[in-house]
Length: 369
Image 1: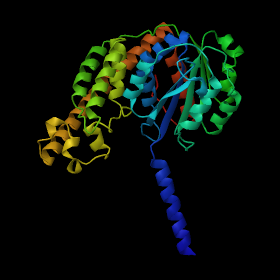
Image 2: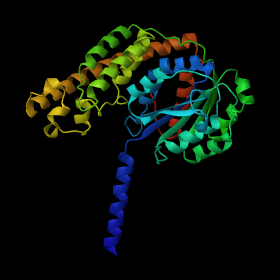
Image 3: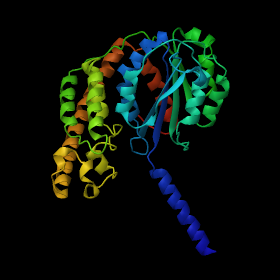
């Protein structure tokens, strides 16, 4: 009897230990209307992605940064098939933020059959959502047509989402009251989410700071610490640089936001970068095949490769810490400027407001502005 009680206690303690130590998640599915009138919305998503990610990355719970996963769907585009309700899963839930950026820049608008209920249902059913009620799981759906279009009832899919612990936040691109009349607010209310309206055609107003130039110069040094390995290493490294160019195409301030992301735990590249892969124990240098190494390392011994990777890891940590220190000053500067200018009514504002409110209910904390 005593033995069985002892085993029961040990089992409970082990379960508690694993439960507490597991890294918490923030999972977000972004559902964007890509019908003809939504070019402004897509532009905001492209230009504000890194600011949104940085807000998620600033969260802490149990003293740790959360694991961030983002998925992307488009709906309402007549280039898609009617048989799937004009919906496409662009990217499933992923930690690869460069992939999300690349996908956003690849979106094109066309036509218009916007079935909100169907896309909410599809994203709820087919994504690999966490089963833990301690993780933050959110759908953001943005568009400007009637929320009740199509054969799939949004009331049923919103109810199913919240039953699975997934909050649905609705973002109407237009007048607040029109969004209420066209059921966007009802959709959010049914799934314990927030309803917002935004001016989707408003260009993102960037706040340039005295720190942007130095941060962006450090980005170049940071990129030099990445070592592409495996089948897709070089292609992924090239995409990293391509997404830098996409971000910089909007403004130096937007590029600084992306660089800040790359200095945080939210930016993970262990599926293609040898430094992250070794750090996260995805590969062991001693067990790597020659053909999986980049050409500059193929003629080196295992000890030389390890020394090279360790050196790059040390350089990266130093650069990231420098970026983070500068970004703190940058954030303080932006907070002060925002108080003078007033808050923007944009996709970024809607998403971060809803995310913070829900996350805090689950025990996540954020730095005070």
